[in-house]
Image (cartoon, rainbow, N blue to C red):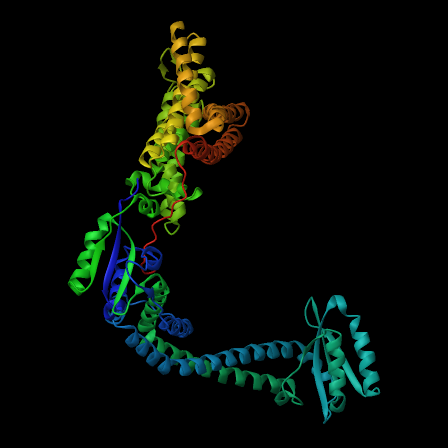
Length: 637
């Protein structure tokens, strides 16, 4: 079902415009429409409401967001944030912008400097760590190197698989320096060879260019470390790391202090600016004249009085909420808002598979909420499987509360598990024939038939087709009601003809099968004769052809029997295969694995086929879609 909607127009003096929009945005009940599309110039001369302040607020939002994300995160103080929000949100835009600018002026430069310095120090410590690790690895080579003033030492690291490159580097090093250089290498670990090159500084640029051209990993020490013994370099590195760590600690303390002072307000400003930015983006749907503003939209009838009271309390008679008279064309444009009982609400999730309903159409969620569990239970029909599916869905709902889509799916499975257990009792199935083997239960004997699915295949097929008749007939009846409510008389006549035609065909088929008395054959033929002109009048030649499609739709429900049969046969195979294995433990494991597979299939396959039977076979008889969902103008959650 859909909630009843009302169309309203909110009119007031321009000076109250921002306050009214804030109030409506906070109430979150109105689905906005573009005023200029709905009000003709002859009724009221209006212009678009252009709000240049929107760009400024958007820019400030980015800056506040950057400051907020830079500061260390602390625990939200909900009470304090609510107080700041209440004090600030209802102020006019100018005051909100002024306060935001003050906060940015107070914090932006300081936090930027601290962040930049912190990044520099982090980079410095990382580089020092790299130098320290490298020097510690190559320190044993130091004794092999000559100590000469005016010479430079460079470290290169080479993977063992490429150690032949060292010969090339040595030869080129000696060529460039005229044999006045030294290269010493040693294994540093299982994968790396370190080499130290010593050469006169006047060859530095040429040698470094050569190393770069060969894509060799070069570790160039800073100038302040050059020419010093490695143990002295290590001491300098540790000293610099300690100094940098101390400065980092001071920066972190300052950032934490700033976060303690400003975090709550920044969090609120970030939210308010986001809300205001979204709010202002809707201004182009509003209209203005020289002295007034106009806002139009749809509102659920249940929220109309509350919204009127909120505006009246704030503005008295200065701002007026008018309920507009609706034509049929207006109703066709109304947004749709679901209003289903709680037990049916999870099935609204499936409506996302098709286009939204029109406001004037019959909303199909109750149909699938009723028949989905019945179809699922009819196909799966096992007490043990029903219990497992219910427990699984319940656990998933409890564990993953953050996913709304998963909550809906698991709720549908929990609801469907109940008729699964009921049908399981009717079929006498508990993990297939295990319950019957143990003597715990047996198939119900009803209408002269023992409803063991393996043995009662024909009766099960007849029941499945009968369900199809009921389901498709329901779709046609709803289609007639839908067509009449939308004043589409021809459509109503066509669907009435289809209903009569199929009824006649069923009577003829049942009479031919000897189920009904022979004299029922004539009424069946009479119904077909009556139906044919109705179908042709309402739908033309395509309407007559569509009858064959409808018959095919009904026969498609045979899958209810076929899928259920496949499930119970796999369950029986699991039991018999497990029993046939000589080792009891292995037999039990095999049976459990096969039953687990069957349960997984039972959760997916019957669900998908049930959805298809609704969307293709039933909904096509009455549902057109093409509407739009109710999207209220409200704050982000």
